[in-house]
Length: 147
Image (tube, rainbow, N blue to C red; front, side, top):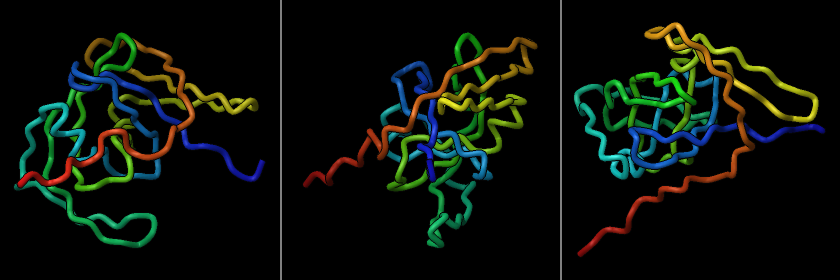
């Protein structure tokens, strides 16, 4: 094949609801859409923002930073700093900070399967999590404004 689907994990974020988390080791941050942030009832700090350039070259400013967001990965939980993005094309994007915090190892297989091995620095435990093909598009869409 000339291309392959992005991979994702479906994770019970903030112990509230399952969210599709797209794996993107090319991203320098972990980010989530504003709609997901609100659905998960996560507070975020609006004083910590950054300007981001998307792959298509557009510039976006983050809304703020959600501190220590719990990401259960199998029987492990990692706490990751997560930037909140208005109208993101994904629910959650797991970038390099996941790889660094979780000392991850990605394994790709010829049949297109993929697993991610994650290390929890707090417990010294490891877990291997299977990934799934990304279903495409965000599940949590912004609500229309109410009048």
